Image (cartoon, one colour):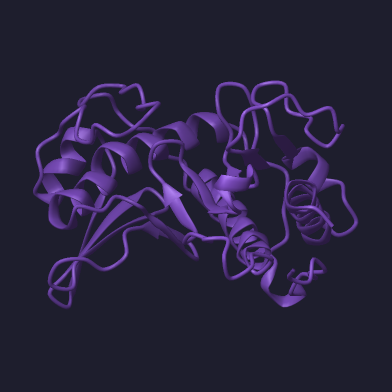
Length: 253
């Protein structure tokens, strides 16, 4: 059994701050861009769709012959053949044209909850301050989730940490599904049921869980809100303890 004690790297954990006005709306616009332009570009070229967080940017790993796509602030960046071009984000149609792909509302059939499109010609209003705040959240989450992955034993099939276009969350999976111990460990920027970002542990086995830790009313799992992290003396430590507790409850002492 692996050691359950993990401690944050203080130098690697960014400071969380109150969310800027319009955070939810700006995040929705960035989600549209990720789902209908950035991820489809990678999928068209490589058959893979997971995205990544890169400091102030999010986007694709390198694919094809050294290509990559990023979103930074309110700009779309296309790296190709050793050169980089960028374009201000306006609409999904413009973004897809810039990346050389057609705009399609259905480009992958495997999503359980496909994102509802705003339409190809709706102007995407992206405030750079929202992008910056979201990047800080992703950096914070990436750090605590990466450390939590270390809890997994050699037989637990710990997956890669990715930024998923479907829900725009960073997440990985860990634990034995054949023993009812597998769960998704992740960080969401917020959704229809949660007005602000949150960390979560979502067990794969859907059963009633009387333990108070499993506190989220919208799914049979646990969540830790941005507001709780914001007032914590040590947000990274609180986050790590929250994620590790979910692992311990599923795996056992």
